[in-house]
Amino acid sequence: MNSHTDAPDLAQAPILHVDIDAFFASVEILDDPSLRGLPVAVGGAGERGVIASASYVARTFGIHSAMSSIQARRRCPSLIILPGRFDRYESYSKSFHDLVRDVTPNYEPLGLDEVFCDLSSLGLLGSSPLALAHDLQARLKAELGLQSGIGVARNKLFAKLGSKAAKPKFSTGGVTEGAGVFWVSPDVEAQWLDSLPVESLWGVGPKTASKLHGLGLRLVRDLLSVDEKLLASHVGASVAQTLCGFARGDDDRSVESARASKSIGHEETFARSVTDAEELAQHIRRHASVVGRAVRESHQLCRTITVVVRFDDLSAVTRQQTVPFSLNDEEAIATIALALIDSIGISQPVRLAGVSASSFVAEGQGAVQLSFGVANNTIASQSAEVQAKRESLRDAIDDIRQRFGVASLGHGVEFADGNLRVDRQRGSHAFGPETLGTSSESQ
Image 1 (cartoon, helix red, strand yellow):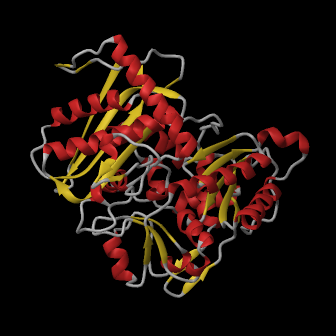
Image 2 (cartoon, rainbow, N blue to C red; image 1 turned 90 degrees about the horizontal axis):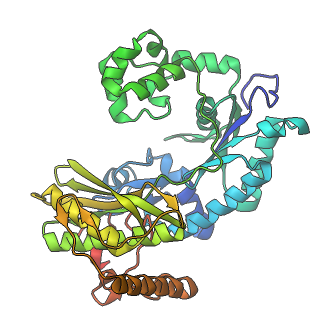
Image 3 (cartoon, helix red, strand yellow; image 1 turned 30 degrees about the vertical axis):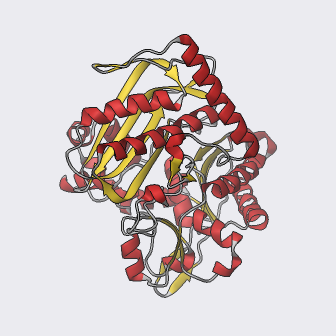
């Protein structure tokens, strides 16, 4: 714990940010103890792969998430890169959330391995936020075998910074254990606001950081002296307002315990860039199949379909269509996605392609339609009988998959080289292909 000796009460520090250490890699090591003590990463092993999670041992070589797999292997030739098993990570994540729920029902998941907790409602119980944080951390270790960093603070901004401060530090000399639980006291707040770089703030990625650096804004304290309107002209009004608030230590975001997914998507970085239009269409149909199934599993309907294409020169194009009806069928999603792909006009090799759905409503709150017009392209309408047959077939396939496994039955687009390949959302190639020599479609 940090050196401030006076323990806070819930009025002073009602927010926890809990972040599991090296989550994907940790799960792989727990499931295969022979990996313990070895440099392990989860990601894409091919030349276009990206590291998603690295074990403690791997981090001592300077390997971290978002690093290219090529660079990671240069730093550590013995690095073991595993492709990732999202079903397993989701199972651990559910157990993680169950333990959090034992502390408070007011928590907000951020992906599989992070949550914000609001402890305000526990005030009448006389609970100590530090005691609750330490108890939760101990249970995560004892019951799930997972290490974590927990930040305890008065708002989300400082709680997230606190969880990072609580984690171990890595260098070529080894691992320096972290505090595990870190309370961001008023003294620490003042110190951080005066000394931290702008990159440490929530939402400041490389592009935003570059813009801020171009304005001479490198430390959080520098934001206090900048005109908000000037900043807005470079990063947008909403971001400018948020950053100026953060520089004062202000963050009024609440913990949204009923936070729903904003989008459901599937994308793939190809082992070899796609140049054939029909091959690209097959990938889009397969992505649409994954998205449609995931939308139905979430018991929602969507109204917006988005496609993204990244070319060999790393430029990217995104197209989006919002329709005046709700849908959850993969053929309907594919029809919109393919029309959007046609509107892009593919003129160079495609390195990555993806499809996502958004603008959700709950099942029963929107009429499902399987035929429509997209942009200026008219899609031939289907009869009510054909639509009904399609819906019945889809529901039957879903039922069989639920009973016998997702790979027990598939659509034609999901077969390659005589084998059924049924990807899940964030599937087996989420971090890039495994090898360079083979098309990812046939792996």
